[in-house]
Every structure is written in structure tokens, then in C-alpha cells.
Length: 213
Image (cartoon, rainbow, N blue to C red; front, side):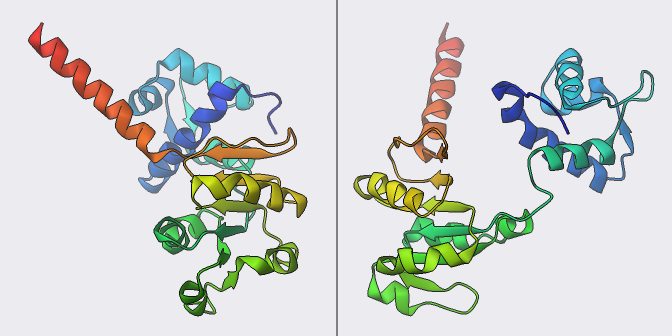
């Protein structure tokens, strides 16, 4: 297993894993730092530097073994075992996350959804049980969930984060439009969907300015 990995490299790990999996599916056995860099829009030296962080892989003139490297990165990211998720908030966002089959295939199955809306609770199925959020303290500890997904209004998210923390949850995927305050021993990933559109808007604006100049 790898030792210390910088935050910058950690942010690139999912891209490495995705590209290596695509290469494996295409039957590629070995790949050079040049070819992998071309795919990922990174320099060959950056590829070599990153992969040296993971451990000793590759031989000069032969490149990197695709499957071996993919599996090693998979283990580094903890994808070699399951991480059960519980979603709090059964609106459009919560149900969209719950219904996306790709998460379960990646080892992130949704095991339950909590909501306060009676109609949504009545939509509970065996495949996706929907429980009253008032029953969170009773039910969550027995679900062996490692991740809680917050698909709530901003004003409700902070209180809910503190509530699930008290129940032992240390990983939160937050879709509420708020940057939450959380303890040091908790990991929170804030997803602000509009941020990507803002960046696209900036890029479009820059391209249009360049075209005019």
C-alpha cells in the first residue's frame, strides 16, 4: 500500500482509475507515461511522478502494467470493499442519487432513504426502503452504513450533519447548497452543482474575449 499521497494526487486518483479501467476493457496490457499522459492531459513527467507515489510500477521501455496499476489504485481508494450509503432527503436530488445504478456497481449501494414527507415514505419498496427521518436514531446504527448523503435544503443540512455525527457517521456527501462546519475526524465532500456551470461560463467568456481581441 502507498504511503503519504498529496491532496493534488488524491484528486487525480479517480481519473487514473477510470482511464486504466477503460484501457483494460479495451484489452490494453501496457501503457507508456506518454500515452497515459496524452489521455489524461498530463505531462509524462507528471504521470511518472504520480505513479512513483503509488509504489514501484513500470519498467523503462515497457510502460506500466494496466491491470496491476488499476487494481493498486482501486485498493488505495478503498474500492476493493463496499461502502453502504444512506440518503437523507427524498426529493428529486435524493431519488436521482438513489436510482443511479452506477454507484452500486462501484461499491456504493444505497441501503435506505430517510424523509419526512408521508407520500415519499409510502413509496418505500423492498429494494429502496424509505423511512421517516424521525426514526433515524433508531434505524441508522443497524444499517452498517459508512456514508450519509445529504440531499436537503441548506437550512437543514448543518443540523442533520451534527445529528448523523452523533450516530457514528464520519463520511458525508453533501448536496445541500451550503459549506458545512464539521469535526476534524469527519470527512465531508460538498457538491455545488452550479460551480461547474460557473466555470464553464468563465471559459466561454474568456474564449469570446480572445476571439474579439
